[in-house]
Image 1 (cartoon, rainbow, N blue to C red):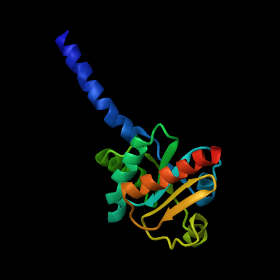
Image 2: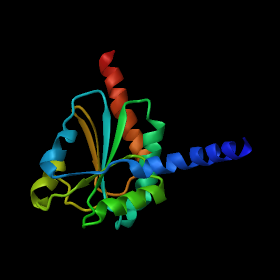
Image 3: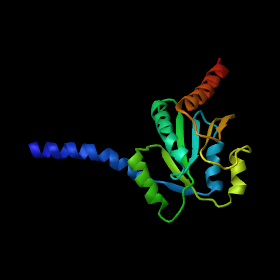
Image 4: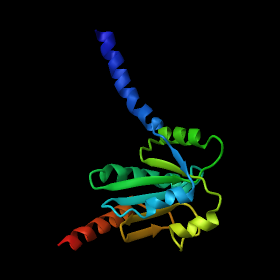
Length: 168
């Protein structure tokens, strides 16, 4: 009886870490990814362009995780768009995600025609990482640098507040 209780406890502790690495990472070209920049629902989207090799990108990841957790009940969706590449990119991203405890959705943007799609994300963005787009319907804010949790939260709150003011 005692052995089975210990085994159950071990399984309960291991399952969450396996769920993090088990999340599927999809790969898109920009045409396939672009619709997420134009959703017209009540969700606020926080879309971050990053790469594992980019130090400021990795430094700001905990802020996106905190936003995902703290705004989970407020229709906020965090999407991390990885610009990493190579044959083993999915495997490397899964290891990275597990090690860093990243539970936000990660997708890979694999589109070599960056000159074409960068300006579609934002005409002022030059493609430097990190970059973050926060939007809700027709409201949009773009950060073309590393951001803090406070900046993310302020932007999200402003967009959500505008919705409630419009409803009054």
